[in-house]
Length: 118
Image (cartoon, rainbow, N blue to C red; front, side, top):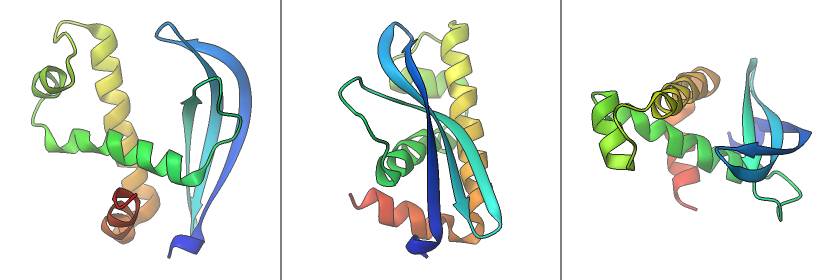
């Protein structure tokens, strides 16, 4: 199954994200007939995007599913529960989880286990 997961990364240039200088990318993942496109950011010293790093990041975002509310998630991650920016981050994590679930389908748990091992 792992070999059926493929990725393309398109470099979008140097940018700022929440005051952080970084490289911006658009990453497209392919699995079977499904695909998922998402923005991805790396530190300035990183010149390449690795599939394992992208997947680890997406599975970290997917942890959002364990929270019953934005407020609970925000408190655990140290965000202000009144912050619109924090709420946008929360919603982006929810979207990433939904998109990743859609990409991997019934194989989601298998991939989560494989990428959480690293």
